Length: 252
Ligand SMILES: NC(=O)c1ccc[n+]([C@@H]2O[C@H](COP(=O)([O-])OP(=O)(O)OC[C@H]3O[C@@H](n4cnc5c(N)ncnc54)[C@H](O)[C@@H]3O)[C@@H](O)[C@H]2O)c1
Image 1 (cartoon, rainbow, N blue to C red):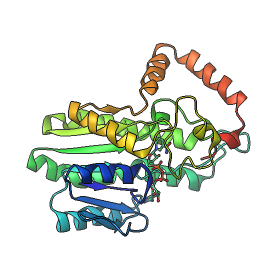
Image 2 (image 1 turned 90 degrees about the vertical axis):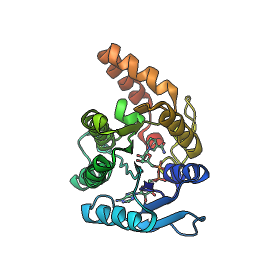
Image 3 (image 1 turned 180 degrees about the vertical axis):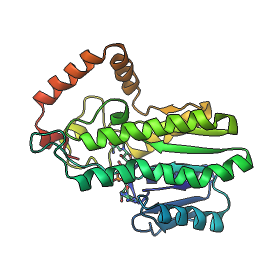
Image 4 (image 1 turned 135 degrees about the horizontal axis):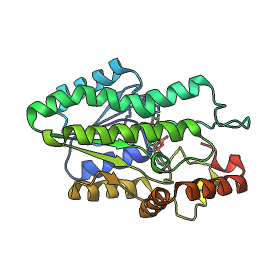
């Protein structure tokens, strides 16, 4: 199996969980993770670059055999709207968010789907976010790209169910990682700040049930249902929350 963005955080939580289950785990990040336990192998891969992604998959398969589970976990988040404009982030922030949060999953799936179809199946896990179902106040680029990759996950699940390919979309709220370090809204969140191992355990449960949506924070499912029931109430509620927040509290 293989995981991107696994130098630490949620990616490493997945890696440790699958290793404990007896898997051989290929982990990658912008720099190759080192000092790894037996049966965990590190690679350098910029996931926003298709050639690098294909190189990672091919090298990992050459060393450890065919990849049965791929976790597209690497992600970036930038603060937008600091200038009082939701579209105020630089094009570079938008392009990096699009490449890492969306296209990385497309590149990996494009490489893996033909061999999975030939072998009769595979499992693709996309780490989106609660921001993919709801929104991330203060970051339009994060919210939009996490919605986009959820749409890709759905499309892949629909297109390839008949090929035996399972797809899971992981949509956590706040988790204690580098991404949330120093973010007071996350660290003091009323719905709790989970550990990476909690998200890994939620994925394990969803795999056992072959469930598409992985909700490490079940309350996110309640918020999502409420949004679907009354979109305007959801927008007004989020706007009210936004007006109460100092954007430095939600800094990504
Ligand atoms: N921490 C949270 O509260 C939270 C909540 C919801 C979703 N997520 C998502 O979980 C995933 C993991 O994030 P995390 O919280 O563990 O944070 P993290 O910062 O510890 O991990 C993200 C990793 O992605 C790597 N990365 C960034 N750009 C890359 C690139 N171009 N190529 C390869 N690797 C790259 C980083 O080096 C980093 O190691 C992300 O997709 C994030 O959006 C996190």
